[in-house]
Length: 304
Image 1 (tube, helix red, strand yellow):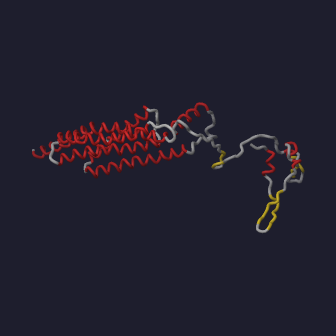
Image 2: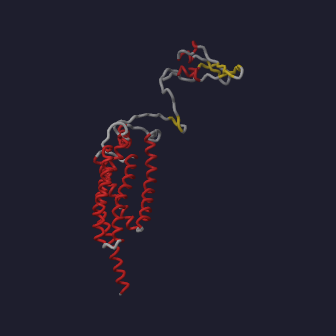
Image 3: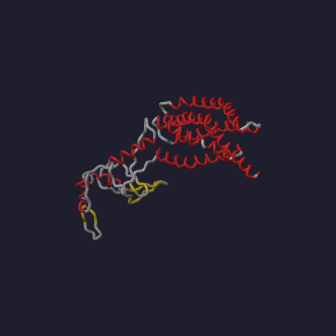
C-alpha cells in the first residue's frame, strides 16, 4: 500500500550527473521534508505557468491521502489483476465449471469493460485439450491403416475399430459413476485403453482367419477361434486390470492425476474384453457370412 506523499519522491528526476572514474551518479533535486510531509504543504507548493505566474499546486490538483494497489500491472495496454488459487480435493475441470457458474450467478460486472481469463494450469489444460483434439483422430487413423495392413481386409479393420466406441462408453460410464470428469489424464487413459482393446480384437480375429486359411468352415472357425483365444484374452486383460486397479482407488498426493487415468483403463478394458470375447466373434460371423452369400449370389448370376 502507498500514499500520494511518495509521488514527489518517485517522480524525482535527475538534473545533472557526476562522474567518478568510469561510474556516473545522478544528481536529484528534491523538496525538503518539511515542505512535503503533509497534503496541505504539498498543496502549497508553487507551480510556474506558461506566462510566468505562480500557482499553488492545490489549485490544479486534489491532494489527499488514500490507499491503492502496491503495484499496477498492465497487459496489452490494459490493467489486469491476477488472483492465484491452489486446488485441493478437486480436479481442474470440475473447479473451472463450478467457479464459472458461481461467477455468472453471484458476480455482476460489465462484460465489455472487464474480461475474465483463466491462466496457469487452466490455460495449459485448454492447450492440452486442443492438442488431444488433433492427436486422438490422428492416432485412430494410424490404427486403422495398421489394421488394414495386418489383416488385408478393410471390413475386418473397420470391425475392430467398432470396438472403440463401445469401449469409450464403458470408460465414460465409469467416470460418471465415480463422479469424475473428462480431463487430460482421463483422455490419455482412453488412448491407452483403445490400444489394449484393439489388441484383444486382433488376437481374436487373427486366430479365426488362421483357421479359415487352414480350410475350416466359417461357422466352425469362429467358434473354435473364440474358444482357443478366450483364455489368452482373459488372462492378459485381467493382469492389466489387477495391476491398475489400486491406482484407480488411490488417494493422496498425485492421485488426482493417476486416478482418472487408471479408472478409464480398468473399467473400459473390462467392457471391451467382454466385447472381444463374446460380441466380436458374432459380428465377425455376420460380416463374413454376408460377404460369402454375396459371392455365391454373384456366381449364380454369372452361371445363369
